[in-house]
Length: 364
Image (cartoon, rainbow, N blue to C red; front, side):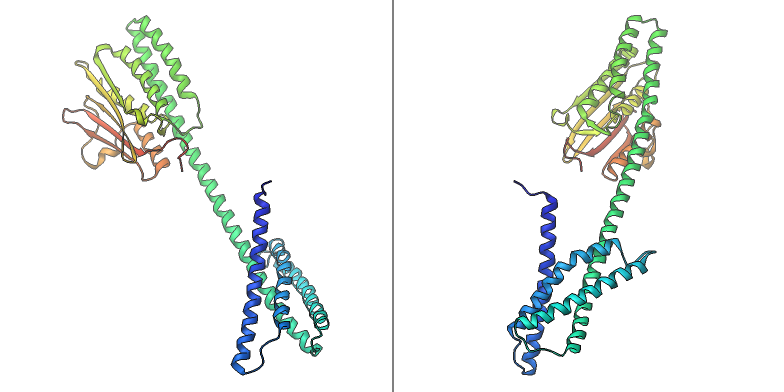
């Protein structure tokens, strides 16, 4: 039968306590031996060795109680006076026990009796040293625990804030996407394309189910995002007919990579809008997703005039969709991402996103 982690932790703590006090006892014995050798006096007897080790082991038994009182009655805070009283009372009890133990041990091993007053004050100094040492360690452990709890609490608050911000940004995309999709439906209705309108409504229902499911999931498999974009491009293809040509290239080995939910949608929406802006001629939208080293790269290109400026301002342009995407990427990946807009030689626009390549189960 396997031992529980709590039991193992307690055994380790007990072993550390006994080991630490045994080390203190050995240091005391070594100090007595060194003092005897330096002064030419006889070496300490076996009684000196065993009395020190047994005394340290007694303090090892007292230590858990002292640590518990450090947690319940600390010497800091508004009730420090109460803590001082409790620890002083315990110290007096342990001092009496140490004096009684030493007296009995002297009789048991037939050691020459020491003057009572001498032993009384030596026991006081000895107990004071041991108790203050345990008290200091107990409070150090308490301060360390409080520090870790504060760090965990701060981390949880930051995580909750980040999740709230991401959810707000993600929900902002819902009406933005729905407005564009409904605009497509209204365009087909105005052209009296009933069959196309019915087909778009059916496809739009599938899109709504895909968009509105799993609101709590910030990252989803790329395969899911690609299916969403394929449905959207199908709707736009019905709307613009021969005026819109689309191409979607996705490397097979990246389909299970994790991407922010609705990452591609605003990029493709912008590309369709700019690629079909001209009333005459044909528009082209090309999507290419690939892996480059440890990064997942997504590029969306259109043949329209677009709105990508030259120079450093290129990465700061774009409407609600791109601004939203930029904010989400910054929240999710910090500096480990890239989002850029640039013009092509034929006057089009390319939006490029690079994020860390992660699969399900590898998110840190």
